[in-house]
Every structure is written in structure tokens, then in C-alpha cells.
Length: 178
Image (cartoon, rainbow, N blue to C red; front, side, top):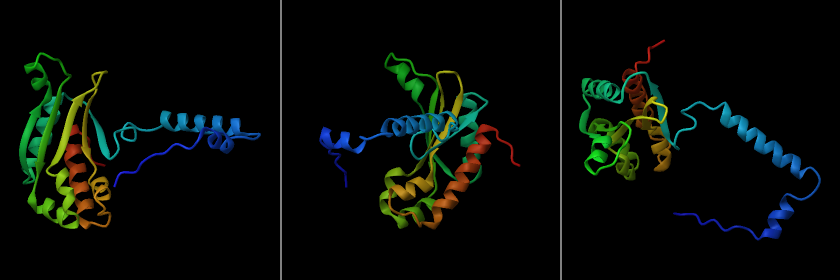
């Protein structure tokens, strides 16, 4: 299941980029990559498969709204973990960071029927944290990404779960509907 990377011998790498214009191509690719990073949104720069939204409020207020919206929709909230409080207990500091663990067998069971290994990523989680600049974020794993990860790209419930999670995130971060 794991791929092993084997670098090619140095001479072969040099031959691939030898010739006139190779320096230009390398510079062009580097420049285009830098531009892509510069103009990417924060969600694009997130960890692979993770959707992130800015929140104008505190970590606690954002997590409170997410938890209430989840409960209002009949989801079970299994746990709310305050990572900063945990860090404090061991004499360390951490910016405000809270994890909510939530879900419903009504959606989770059909998702696992598509690929039972998706159970490793269930129940779902939402992370609310404050970054180095004081900006609060809410992030969660994209269910479509989870479906791909578990080779269930055609699982019909993934899109529905994604839509519901998007709605919860918009409520929690105070985004208005169009």
C-alpha cells in the first residue's frame, strides 16, 4: 500500500534538465508555483483534505455555535476537547484550540457501507483554533476527500455529508447566506 520513492542516479537527473532552455523552464516553473501560492485562498493552503473557514469570533464562541448547530440538526456531540486546557495541565502553553467530535449513525453507517475503512475517520471532527496572528479558524475533513481516501469516490452519501458540514461551518463562523 505504501509507495517507496527511489531517487534516480545523479547523472540521469542532470540529463533530464540538460540542454538550452532548461534553466528558463526551471525558473518559469518556480515562478509559476510561487504565483499560485501567492494567489491561493487560505482553504487551498490548508492541510490536504481539510476545509478551513475564518471566524470573526473567539474559539469558544465559534465552537459553541458549531456544537449548538450540530445538536439542533440531531447530531450526537460525543466530545469537546480543549487542547489548550490539556497543555496547561502539563505546564505548557497552547493558543486556544478546541476539537468537537460529532456524528450520526444515520449518515455514518451508509458511508461505512461504501467502504468500511472510512470508520477510522468517523465520528467526524471539527477543529477550532487561533493562529499566530490571532485569527480564529474552523476546519474539518472534507467528506469527499475521505471518500477518495477510502476508495469510495462514488459513495452517494459523501456529498450529502459534505453539504451538511458546510452548512454547520457557515453557521459556526457567522457566514451569511446569499
